[in-house]
Length: 108
Image (cartoon, rainbow, N blue to C red):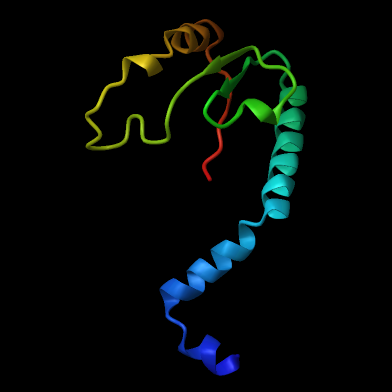
């Protein structure tokens, strides 16, 4: 086993570590801990609107002021695609009226 680990490529070693960290238990534990964090932040600033990304953020709190829909690649450099289903104009209006907001999004 020690010889196998020593001769393992960096790529293979990183994939092995990622596989171990991606267990169901670790995923659920991470969601639970993140939801606690979101709740604590929402309690610290109750006057700020809490907005959930429908793609990967809706399960982090029981109640949200609003929701949005965007991908992690939206707005990246050299990403010239424009998807009208993710305009989120209501979020722009909300941010303009409130000047600030808390957006819940996770990158896996």
